[in-house]
Image (cartoon, rainbow, N blue to C red; front, side, top):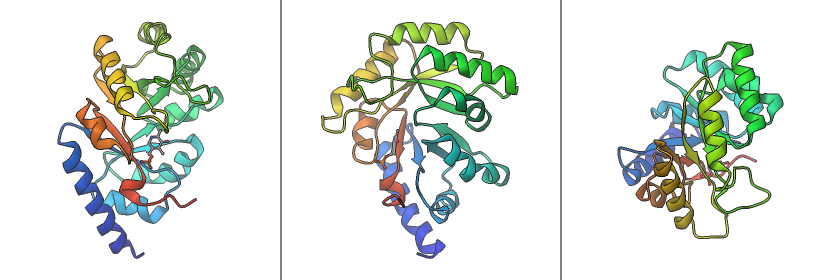
Length: 219
Ligand SMILES: *Cc1c(COP(=O)(O)O)cnc(C)c1O
């Protein structure tokens, strides 16, 4: 597709998604495994908030674009290994996937060592208790949140979840929103291509949308 056609199709999808989620909810463009053409097309439509799953992929995609484009916000939405913490705090304005004290400590050390502005943190909650998935358990959330609030030099602003693929998402969304209210956290990141409108109705402040915005991933 030419960039013009590409831009038009992403622009139409974006307009539709924005109207479905309403003006209060932020569309995070989940850009993993999308081509450079599509990234540039999304930028052309005015999209500025992007979610990335992997630190290395994000570095190669965004390092130059960060210099060239005003107002970009990069959010890490994939799992983070402690040995990538320094690269992550240098690149991302928001890290959505804090899920353990060891990672919290690594992030604090990384901010200290790099002198980077501390990214805002969200805690990922494993609402479906899935062993293979990242996220702190609902029972462990209070302890991790207290530790983060007591020791992190930046802001701890909210919660994020990825419901189990094979279950209805609504109860997970409702639970995450309830937890955010209970702990007085303003940001609620939930909802993807198949259920962003539902998530928005159930209290999401941020929806993370990939394929419904860009089209099927490249690989
Ligand atoms: C890939 C991804 C998304 C977007 O997925 P789509 O189904 O393409 O919208 C959202 N959140 C996370 C954490 C992801 O890894």
